[in-house]
Image (cartoon, rainbow, N blue to C red):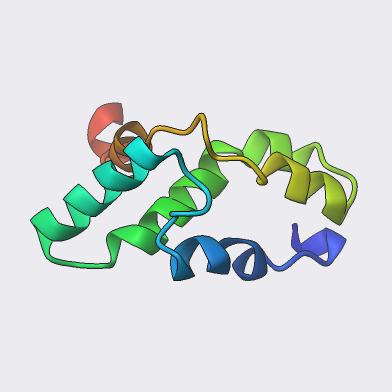
Length: 96
């Protein structure tokens, strides 16, 4: 992304700012907020942003322009919060 002059934070900041309410399906936003309240921390929000970038990283690596990257990251309606968080947070435990 940086080689194409795209700053990842500029893409994910709206997700973080609005706690994914404009990016994810309503049910997934509620699952995210359930975790935020349950763990009593907002740190889960940027963690989910990183998890989404990692999940979409292969598609991002194939992009040749900023517009293509934005297209890949435009719609999160099919993403599932819990599996993304689990895969990111517990990736080392799954490998051992």
